[in-house]
Amino acid sequence: MPINPLDWTAGPFLTLYVILAGLACLACFFLRERIGRAQAPSGNLDELQLAYLAGGPQRVADVVALGFMAAKAPAGAQGGSADPAWCCGATGASASAA
Image (cartoon, rainbow, N blue to C red; front, side):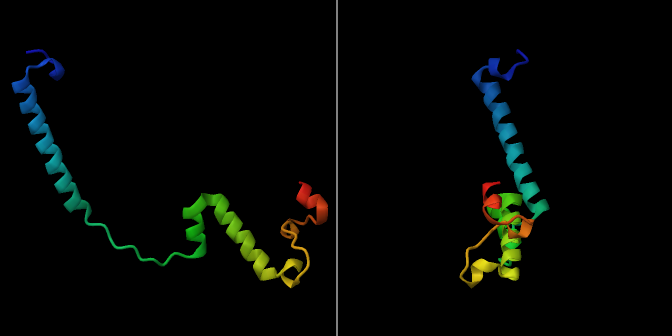
């Protein structure tokens, strides 16, 4: 009998296949019991966690910047033009061009 299982005849190959499939199923059941069942999600995610899940570190940075903008209430909040670059020290048209 050749060493390569793909060169075997149907009987020995199917025997090996059934044995390996059974071992794989037993390993799955054993690991499932050992690891444990999945827990129900808590549902208590804050804005930063949701931002990270939605878009990674870039989205978190956006949320933090928006939080700073909301806390400082830039001119746009009172009806003026909103300048998103106010937090970086740049102002006006030069900031939006950069």
